[in-house]
Image 1 (cartoon, helix red, strand yellow):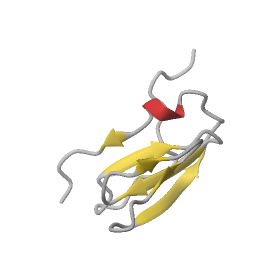
Image 2 (tube, helix red, strand yellow):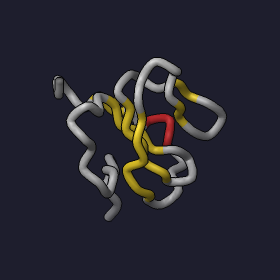
Image 3 (cartoon, one colour):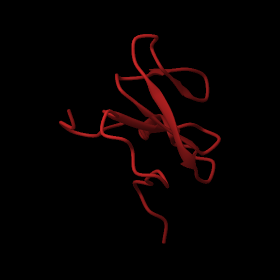
Length: 72
């Protein structure tokens, strides 16, 4: 059975407010909401970001963006 909501392999730091997976399986954490490109997410030039590991390639990567809640 596959997990309908895959999760990054590493726990995000407390400053991460958004988590997303790229099409190639890479997981990223962002301090501000990232922007969507052709096959990945990217920081919007006002926040920080961090790699959180790699999973299997995800054909539904556009649905992976998740707000981590009020972590500030």
